[in-house]
Structure formats: structure tokens, C-alpha cells
Amino acid sequence: MDEAVEWLLGSDEPGIRLQARRDLLDQPGSESPADILAGPKVAALLEGQRPDGSFAKRVTIRRYAGTSRSPEDLIGVDHVDLTPDVGGTMWRTLSLTELAVPPDPRVLASADFLLDATVPAKPSRVVDGLARVYGFGPGGVLLIASRLGLASDPRTATIAERLIEWQWPDGGWNCHVKASGRRSSFHQSLLPARGLREYAIATKDPAAAKAADRAAELFLQHQVYFSTGTGVPSRSRPNPRPAGAIIDQRWTKLGYPSYWHYDVLAALTFLAIDRSVTDSRADPALSLLERKRRPDGRWAADRQWWVPKGHRFEHQVEVVDWGVAGVPSEMITLHALRILRAAGRWRP
Picture 1 (cartoon, one colour):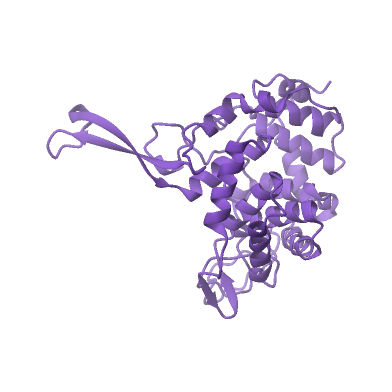
Picture 2 (cartoon, helix red, strand yellow):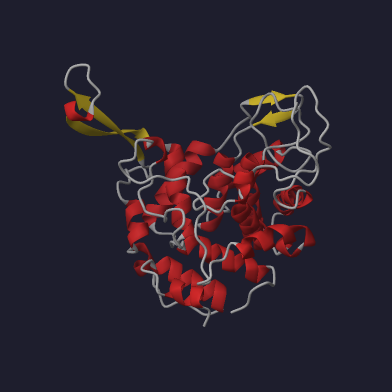
């Protein structure tokens, strides 16, 4: 057996073991829904849930003697839970679905809270006929609802309809009010694309499938992370990248979770869902992913967007340890093997 698969099957997280056996070996997992809900990461993600299904944002208040801010003068630390945090609740719930949680009442309560909080009526801004929206929010909630069996909920359908309505001509979405309209934001486009793809799979909705196809074509036109620009400066883009240049070196770095950030792993995960990852234009990104495989067959994070509890950047704190940069990552390895299998570049 592949050493990396064997490693995943030995995970202490039942949801990872289930997905490795199901998605990589085509075998049924022995893990029950109760087993998955009792997994250490799942349990940590569900900890602190409020009665309405949300999770509150916790801030740390450090008290010092007088006006000093010296560590030596620290006299106390208080942790205060603020009002329900829609963003934090979405990232936690999305992480739960990544760990194959069943539609448990606690998880469904979080999804219900998000659907009530997210159903959009109109874009925040429309400039030159193009909606300027933060697409990752409704896109993430659409992805969650579709995975948890809530695709038929009218609120879910409304989110899908709005995202389709707000899609830019190039197939993506963009929140920047000063953007020219020539190109959407890859960061803002990834989660709407993933949400619409899984919504289309769950509902057979042709409009959602077409919208997801358009987003996939946007990424493939760029071979996932390369510029198609002319390199000619303009007033709005004084230092444009020429065709064939890497758009952003950070996109070539692996990390999990990526949250709203676009990178090669997250993009290929989307393209692998419907096998468009077999398009030859995805080959450079697939080759990059293969080169990042360690001698032991596993993948490690190149960088991380999350920080552990107690870190000074408290707005980025995670409640679970997803693995630090340079250390083999179960989730990155699982996603990488799924992608390469879908592309026909790896088989068990």
C-alpha cells in the first residue's frame, strides 16, 4: 500500500480515515457518524457553540499595572466572548464538512444560523454594471449547505441565484470598487465556484453548473496561476505582469486551511470535483503539486494562514492544530492524492 495512504489510515481523526479509504481506495469506511463526531478536531471545532448554532468571537484583554505594557507588569488576562461571529462560524463549519461530519443537529444548527445570516438581497456596491461583492462569504455558506443536505432549502437556492447574478463576464467575482472590470479576483472567486459546483451536483441545476464551468474556465485560462497579460503598463496597472509570469508567488505555496486565499491546492481541489483537472492547461499546476511531494510520499504545508491559541494575532487564531509549515499535513496529503487521482496521475 502507498505509504502516504497507510499514514492517513492511521490518523487519529476518524473523518480523515473515512475519506482516505473512501476516496483513495474505493472502500467503505468502518467509522460511524458517532466516531466522526468524537474525533479530536471535530470535537474542538464544536466546542463553545452557542444555542443559536453560532460561535462567538473571543478576544483577549490583558490588564497591566498603570499605563505600562511591559510583560513584567501584566497583572491579569480576561477572555471575553463577543456577539455571534458569522465569519468564524462559517470557517468552523466549513472545516467540519472537510472532516466528513454527518448532518448532526449541532452542525445543522450552525448551517441554519449561517443561512439566516447570509442570504443576500443585493450587492453592497455596483460599479459600471458589475456587482462588487465579497464572494467568499455566500460561496462558503453555499458549499456548507450543499454538503450537509440543505441544497433544497430556499435560502440555499437564493444564495446560488445571487452568486450567478453577480458573476463577472470573465467567470469570477470581485469586491474591489476600483477594479476596471477586466478581471475578477481569484481570491473572491474560489469559494463561490466551489459552492456552485457542489450545489449543481446536489440539485442538477444547469445554471449553477454553467456558472461553475465559467469559473473553472477562468482558472484554466491562466493555467491556474500564470498571467495572461500583455505586460504593457496602464494607468490602473503601472506594473503589469507579462504573459507566462507567475501572478503571485504565494499562490504556489501549499497551506491548509486556505480560508479565502487562492492557491494552487485550493484551485486544483475545485477543478478535481468534476474532472476538469484533466484539462491539459492544469498540467503545470499538477506538476508543481507532484514536485512538492516529500520522499516519504506525504505533503507538508509551505506556509500557514492560521495561528494557534494564545498568538498575538488573535483574529487569525484557530481552535485546532492543522499542522505547521514544514511538517507533513494529513489534510494537504489527502487533498493532493485526491487531485492526482482525479487527474490520472496517481493510483492506489
